[in-house]
Image 1: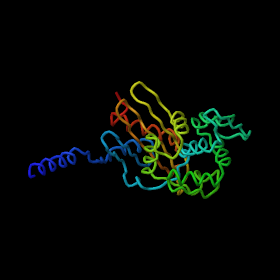
Image 2 (image 1 turned 90 degrees about the vertical axis):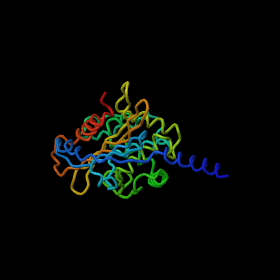
Image 3 (image 1 turned 180 degrees about the horizontal axis):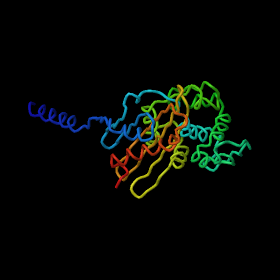
Image 4 (image 1 turned 135 degrees about the vertical axis):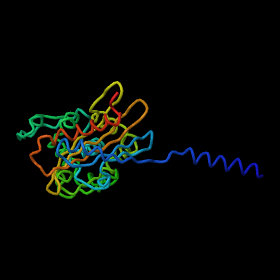
Length: 268
């Protein structure tokens, strides 16, 4: 009997000791990358294989911001799931309103609208989905605070929708692992249009965002990197009071790659 208890105790101890404990690392030195572009902000990387979080400015991890165009990931899923958008080649005709971004001034399908972050396309998509269905799917997907106040075509831009870096990472994990409440077809289409860089060593799937909040520009670059044996999830959120910062748009992405190279995630 004692022998059996000893074996069971050792087995339980073995299982417990072999279970990986989640770890965190704080990298204050990443501040130099934000200083380089005269922005403030925060960065988080989740290493799935090591079950490890790496933070710069962890204080912002749970702070909520307007998602701006990072919401296009969820908006695409909802458009596909509701049948408003048939597939990635579904065209919405340009409304002939000339906008500052020249890439927007033409007809777009889902994949080009995602790539060019074409606001009017996604505003029309949201209007066709409608307020009731939009709110239903935001709640069902547990996206940010799921607040659709401020107008059906503005709630993720200037309305009440908010999301934290922590929630961005959680949403991306559930997307990657097919754990969102959308059909596999919808998920596969969105995963395909999210691919931003495809190399022999890794694939980056991501989305930018740029909005305003509390008299500051707020910029995002969120996504995940798939390597041969691991997945890394990241969220970069930058802020600036200087509305004339010419590097603001590019720095959202540039900072991420500087950090990924530093961490040897993308640098070979």
